[in-house]
Image 1 (cartoon, rainbow, N blue to C red):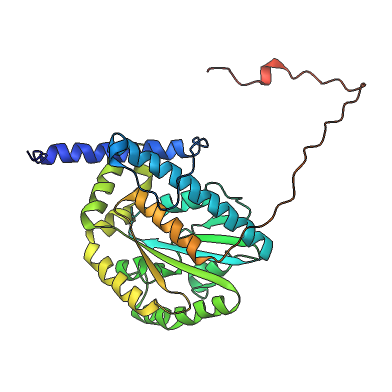
Image 2 (tube, rainbow, N blue to C red; image 1 turned 90 degrees about the vertical axis):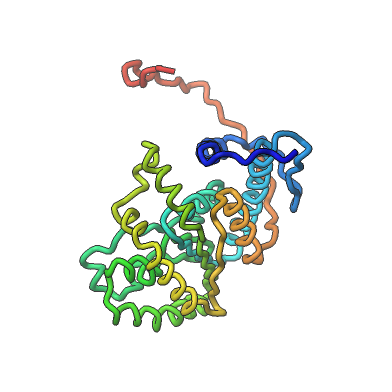
Length: 309
């Protein structure tokens, strides 16, 4: 006998529950170093228990395995002096930040860093458009992830009227040449567009509105972008069409399912960087020296913080 179709209210509550579980899992990820890595290509078995529990465990174990590969890639980048730029673009609430966090989570921040530039200053507005981004490009042995990038001009600036038609067209004339220059200089440029549905963005915005811990993520610009969904869609289509070049193609990440988007994006990123294992020397912890004339000074009690917990 087929299961009864859940009511809209039940479906909404279940969806909100999944969102809260995802928030909780985000906090667990850095604590769960004891997960056993999943076998590559393994899928959760519906017979092994509650499907949601099985799916969560699979997510944790597979994320942990992929992050181990990111560490290997990171070591190879340092060893070889490779330079990588990863652009993360997409609508507001598309999950860019969540993917970036999982990529950088276990990497050395001196090697792998995030560039999330604020709105340009009055001085920066008078500079060559790409100038403020150039300062954040990687040196040898570095990975830089742009949480939004120079493609602001093709998206928010176009839709919100922050640039003229002439500036917009000049961007499309310049950006392919600019990116070809980066690639010729030895920088590997990887561009991701995170794609979500109209309905999913509305749900995520409402979740932020009703969650005090997430309200800071909503800016007036985000709310304005929600009104202009169709204009953003048209701008995205033009951007992908005019800037998808062989030297730096676009890759679209279906991102309605956050966890799948994270795993799929990291898996794809690893496939794009042709890294190999770097042999490490065995690390030997030296013995601490002891000096008989050393006496540890007492720290005054009044400068200790209160032991509330």
